[in-house]
Length: 185
Image (tube, rainbow, N blue to C red; front, side, top):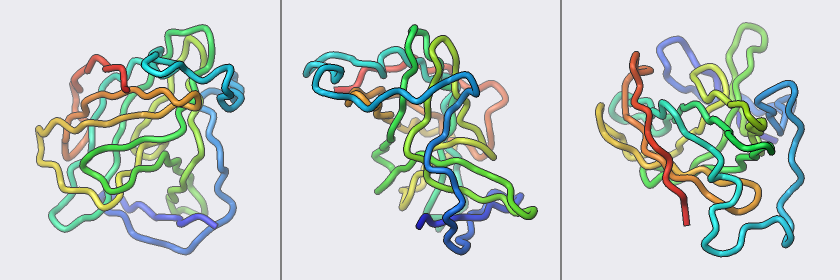
């Protein structure tokens, strides 16, 4: 059972009833297929960059919410320059107690959010994390102020990580900064 959340036009997040109809896996492109889970043979060696190194995180930003709001979201474009799909399986940020990959769907005129197990960034393609679609949900966050730099780390199915910096903003920047990704530990 997954917690479903409704989003109203003002970007406030309100809890709603639990729903089982939300799909557990999101593929960012209709042509993409899910990559198999990492095994000892495919997992990166300690200190190696792994599959996440193929990702460029572009135009990353975190929504600034009114004082007292507990949850927010991070958005970006994930570009995959490699010849194989990259499977993002999680995220974390020091501003949040917990982070999850989320999707959004419309049902009966109500927008609902749900956790997803992974986002596949297709070989040579991209996945867009945007309001009203895929995003990283940041729970129990310490409120960033507009203009703050927020560290965001994505985890991939092979155990590798990609760390980037996202701009805190009340709305999608019209000219969002392109931030060069940094290889994770």
